[in-house]
Image (cartoon, rainbow, N blue to C red; front, side, top):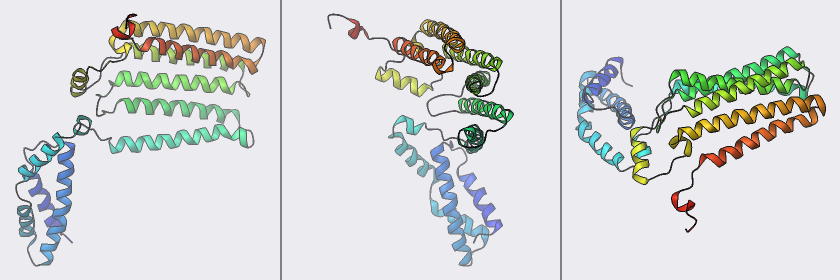
Length: 300
């Protein structure tokens, strides 16, 4: 087993050997692998009677030329697909946050499911559970958009908060509207509908004003392969029109939902929201992709 002094010497010598070398994810993995091997080798040399500093220097010398090893690694990685060469690993802290927040949301959803399988909970707990699910989902969305990925840069903090807020509003609105089917007064239905509408408008605005976040290597790859992007990334005016269509569809759907709720009752009013979703999806499918010149030529 290595001593504290030899361990420190290993870290110092290894950092010196990698001085000036760009620590890409692959090189960092190589360095950590070498560190583990050096710890084992130094322990063997110390057991054989070598002093700690001598053992560390000998183990480093046995590795050979670090720069040549790194060069061989980079050459092998250069033959890999670009999405492997440029891959970004998720941060450990982000994964831990996501797991913890997801656990909290799962607990809140379990609370909401209790009235279907057990005694009726107090209404205040059901409202709190809906609020917790909406808030946690919004935080997860905002946090995820703030993370750098292999192909995209992170979303600016303000826009990420906007997406997270829109997510929370949509979920809260839908949840409070659903609770009105149990015990909440009608005012909650109106409030939930307004929250849902504001969330949809927020998503529409953010989507229509979103700029390209692709990294340069992705843009070059798309250009080299002549990949056809979606219509909204090529035509901002189309994205704006889709936003207006979406707002109109949901205004009509919510109005129809309210009218049906007061006339024919809850058993049929949900069909208005379903029709709104179907209309929005059909509109999206119709507008998102542009036919190519060849496809639009009637003679082809």
